[in-house]
Length: 99
Image 1 (cartoon, rainbow, N blue to C red):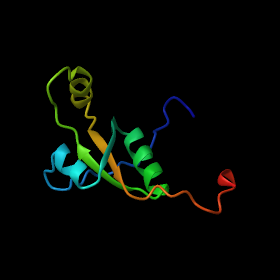
Image 2: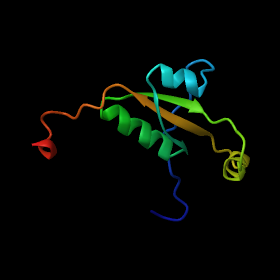
Image 3: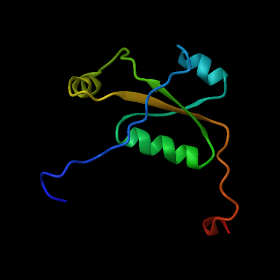
Image 4: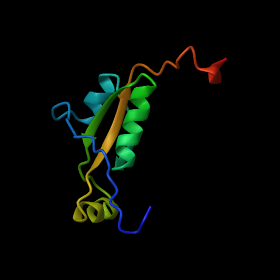
């Protein structure tokens, strides 16, 4: 790829499940996985979906402690979200990896 070539990325729009707190999500069967920004956010979400999981992306909210990395990313226009999954997780039966 040449130095001047544009890189196109698909971005997942964040659609939160209301204003659910972590405790509420955990009670509803969700498991917290990671907090990421694009392009890894889309890759991880699609990976979990392909494994049969239901995926919820919750926009990141600064909490207590150091938020320097998130603040720096936000200043550059990055949006971070926390990946939550539940259910699913069944491997495809026809996949030779699981023979």
